[in-house]
Image (cartoon, rainbow, N blue to C red; front, side, top):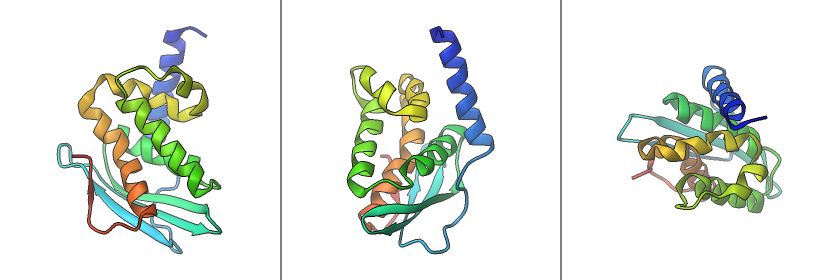
Amino acid sequence: MNDYDLSELYQELILDHSKHPRNLGALADASHQAEGFNALCGDRVTVFLKLASGRVEGASFAGKGCAICTASASMMTEEVKGQTLAEVEKLFTRFHDLLTSPAEPVEDLDTLGRLASLAGVRRFPMRVKCATLPWHTLKAALDKKTGAVSTE
Protein backbone atom coordinates (compact mmCIF):
# COMPACT_ATOMS: atom_id res chain seq x y z
CA MET A 1 0.00 0.00 0.00
CA ASN A 2 1.51 3.36 -0.97
CA ASP A 3 1.46 6.56 1.11
CA TYR A 4 -1.51 7.96 -0.84
CA ASP A 5 -3.62 4.85 -0.21
CA LEU A 6 -2.69 4.90 3.47
CA SER A 7 -3.54 8.60 3.75
CA GLU A 8 -6.91 7.99 2.09
CA LEU A 9 -7.61 5.07 4.40
CA TYR A 10 -6.75 7.22 7.43
CA GLN A 11 -9.04 10.01 6.22
CA GLU A 12 -11.89 7.51 5.84
CA LEU A 13 -11.27 6.20 9.36
CA ILE A 14 -11.36 9.72 10.82
CA LEU A 15 -14.54 10.55 8.88
CA ASP A 16 -16.19 7.32 10.00
CA HIS A 17 -15.44 8.02 13.67
CA SER A 18 -16.58 11.63 13.38
CA LYS A 19 -19.86 10.76 11.64
CA HIS A 20 -20.52 7.60 13.68
CA PRO A 21 -18.75 8.11 17.01
CA ARG A 22 -18.35 5.09 19.24
CA ASN A 23 -19.12 5.29 22.96
CA LEU A 24 -21.00 8.59 22.62
CA GLY A 25 -23.08 9.52 25.65
CA ALA A 26 -22.77 9.62 29.40
CA LEU A 27 -21.69 6.44 31.14
CA ALA A 28 -24.34 5.92 33.83
CA ASP A 29 -22.07 4.12 36.31
CA ALA A 30 -18.93 6.20 35.71
CA SER A 31 -16.52 6.36 38.63
CA HIS A 32 -14.49 9.18 37.05
CA GLN A 33 -15.29 12.06 34.75
CA ALA A 34 -13.85 15.36 33.59
CA GLU A 35 -14.79 18.18 31.25
CA GLY A 36 -12.60 19.72 28.56
CA PHE A 37 -12.94 22.89 26.53
CA ASN A 38 -10.96 24.28 23.61
CA ALA A 39 -11.56 28.04 23.63
CA LEU A 40 -10.02 28.51 20.17
CA CYS A 41 -12.55 26.41 18.28
CA GLY A 42 -15.31 25.75 20.79
CA ASP A 43 -14.82 22.00 21.23
CA ARG A 44 -16.40 20.73 24.46
CA VAL A 45 -16.01 17.19 25.68
CA THR A 46 -16.80 15.27 28.85
CA VAL A 47 -15.03 11.96 29.36
CA PHE A 48 -16.64 9.27 31.52
CA LEU A 49 -14.72 6.29 32.88
CA LYS A 50 -15.60 3.27 34.94
CA LEU A 51 -12.54 1.96 36.75
CA ALA A 52 -12.36 -1.29 38.67
CA SER A 53 -9.37 -3.25 39.94
CA GLY A 54 -6.94 -0.81 38.30
CA ARG A 55 -8.45 -1.27 34.85
CA VAL A 56 -10.74 0.77 32.60
CA GLU A 57 -13.95 -1.25 32.38
CA GLY A 58 -15.94 1.41 30.55
CA ALA A 59 -15.26 4.63 28.67
CA SER A 60 -17.47 7.11 26.87
CA PHE A 61 -17.66 10.77 25.97
CA ALA A 62 -20.24 13.45 25.41
CA GLY A 63 -20.11 16.95 23.99
CA LYS A 64 -19.81 18.84 20.75
CA GLY A 65 -16.65 19.16 18.77
CA CYS A 66 -15.18 19.35 15.33
CA ALA A 67 -14.60 16.20 13.27
CA ILE A 68 -11.02 15.79 14.56
CA CYS A 69 -12.03 16.14 18.22
CA THR A 70 -14.97 13.75 17.84
CA ALA A 71 -12.94 11.15 15.95
CA SER A 72 -10.12 11.36 18.49
CA ALA A 73 -12.54 10.93 21.42
CA SER A 74 -14.27 8.02 19.70
CA MET A 75 -11.03 6.18 18.95
CA MET A 76 -9.64 6.98 22.40
CA THR A 77 -12.62 5.45 24.21
CA GLU A 78 -12.30 2.29 22.13
CA GLU A 79 -8.57 1.98 22.81
CA VAL A 80 -8.59 2.49 26.58
CA LYS A 81 -11.30 -0.04 27.41
CA GLY A 82 -9.80 -3.02 29.17
CA GLN A 83 -6.43 -1.37 29.72
CA THR A 84 -4.70 -0.92 33.05
CA LEU A 85 -4.07 2.58 34.36
CA ALA A 86 -0.37 2.19 33.55
CA GLU A 87 -1.21 1.16 29.98
CA VAL A 88 -3.55 4.15 29.57
CA GLU A 89 -0.85 6.50 30.87
CA LYS A 90 1.65 5.06 28.39
CA LEU A 91 -0.88 5.33 25.55
CA PHE A 92 -1.59 8.97 26.47
CA THR A 93 2.13 9.79 26.34
CA ARG A 94 2.70 7.99 23.03
CA PHE A 95 -0.33 9.64 21.40
CA HIS A 96 0.57 13.09 22.73
CA ASP A 97 4.17 12.68 21.53
CA LEU A 98 2.91 11.56 18.12
CA LEU A 99 1.11 14.88 17.66
CA THR A 100 3.43 17.28 19.49
CA SER A 101 6.97 15.95 19.19
CA PRO A 102 9.22 17.96 16.83
CA ALA A 103 10.55 14.71 15.33
CA GLU A 104 8.38 12.28 13.39
CA PRO A 105 7.88 9.36 15.83
CA VAL A 106 7.81 6.66 13.16
CA GLU A 107 7.88 3.74 15.60
CA ASP A 108 4.65 4.90 17.23
CA LEU A 109 2.79 4.69 13.93
CA ASP A 110 3.09 0.92 14.11
CA THR A 111 2.26 0.59 17.80
CA LEU A 112 -0.68 3.01 17.94
CA GLY A 113 -2.90 1.13 15.52
CA ARG A 114 -5.92 3.15 14.41
CA LEU A 115 -4.81 6.12 16.51
CA ALA A 116 -1.96 6.59 14.03
CA SER A 117 -4.58 7.82 11.55
CA LEU A 118 -4.51 11.12 13.44
CA ALA A 119 -0.76 11.60 12.85
CA GLY A 120 -1.42 13.93 9.89
CA VAL A 121 -2.99 16.44 12.29
CA ARG A 122 0.52 17.36 13.46
CA ARG A 123 0.94 19.37 10.22
CA PHE A 124 -1.82 21.73 11.43
CA PRO A 125 -0.83 23.12 14.85
CA MET A 126 -4.25 24.63 15.54
CA ARG A 127 -5.87 21.21 14.96
CA VAL A 128 -3.49 19.41 17.34
CA LYS A 129 -5.46 20.98 20.19
CA CYS A 130 -8.65 19.47 18.77
CA ALA A 131 -7.15 15.98 18.62
CA THR A 132 -5.54 16.13 22.06
CA LEU A 133 -8.44 17.69 24.00
CA PRO A 134 -10.18 14.34 24.66
CA TRP A 135 -6.87 12.88 25.83
CA HIS A 136 -6.14 15.73 28.25
CA THR A 137 -9.70 15.34 29.51
CA LEU A 138 -9.15 11.59 29.94
CA LYS A 139 -6.03 12.30 31.99
CA ALA A 140 -7.91 14.83 34.13
CA ALA A 141 -10.65 12.24 34.74
CA LEU A 142 -8.07 9.67 35.84
CA ASP A 143 -6.46 12.25 38.14
CA LYS A 144 -9.92 13.31 39.42
CA LYS A 145 -9.20 16.95 38.59
CA THR A 146 -12.03 19.44 38.93
CA GLY A 147 -12.74 22.35 36.63
CA ALA A 148 -12.63 22.32 32.86
CA VAL A 149 -9.46 21.11 31.19
CA SER A 150 -8.07 23.29 28.42
CA THR A 151 -5.51 22.70 25.72
CA GLU A 152 -4.10 26.19 26.30
